Length: 254
View 1 (spheres, helix red, strand yellow):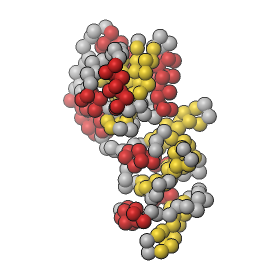
View 2 (tube, one colour):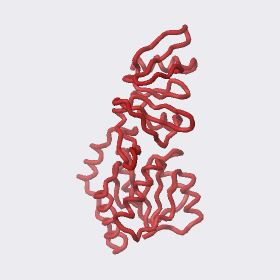
View 3 (tube, helix red, strand yellow):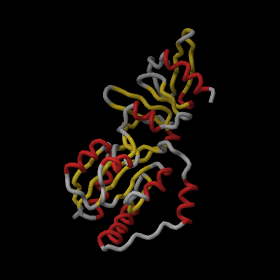
View 4 (cartoon, one colour):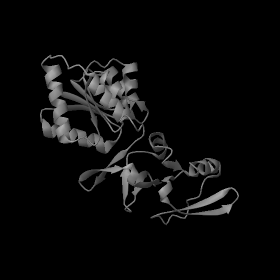
């Protein structure tokens, strides 16, 4: 079976490839792509695979945009933490719709569906109204709900409710949790503000995106300058940018 993985979180992409090969050593991963642009280019230049595993929210747009630009006739398994795209996902060559973090059991089930409906030429089952109603009920949060991070040789899931702030350091981006741990993530701060709930997190300057709970103390330096003391941080350069001050005050009042 020839497979393409489209996922912009490199740790998650590696984990999906590991799961696939653990389940079936005969699976051949043709490509691991991380954007709408690179995916469109790949499908334009290569023969179609047997199956695509595709995240919905990519750094440069929704993966559904791929289908608008190039013909993708092979079946798709969608992998995402975003529940609100469930109904749309079922309408685009979909074998299954799996919420992250994907377990080995979930992946086995999805591959079994692929083999049943596509390799044996059986028609896929109709999506009953009861299932659609269940999907509608679970649609609640359009923003990222968790991050996959590496802890030694293991991969763990960190819920956004447990994140105090995100920060950039040298060439990396990290999240800082309520229990005082830092984990590297495959996002820039610019990308983070596009996928995080703006009611929960706010970008205060070029280095930090913070939650309300992250604020230990606020110090007025001048009429146009506020210094933020963050829990678990001894960084002395956590000033609110002047051009962000009005937006920050409005966010505090939400």
